[in-house]
Image (cartoon, rainbow, N blue to C red; front, side, top):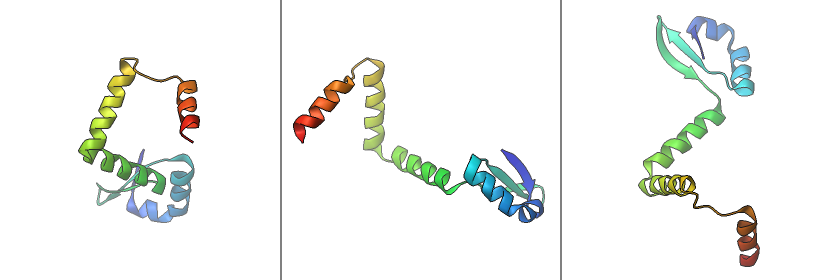
Length: 90
């Protein structure tokens, strides 16, 4: 992550936007020497929003925790079992 002043960001906005979109770079933009805004890709922003929505949902968070516990305990299904079950249901 790079920190740049807003005057420089204005002059380089096309380049910065390309780097953010292609390389998933992040830029902290300062105003009067203080961090003011972040420049991130739309995809990354949407991913963060989805994560916040997920961890804000108590039921979904409980399901996620249970899944992690099941996996750690080895309580999983083999791929052929899953595919067989999906085939049986269709």
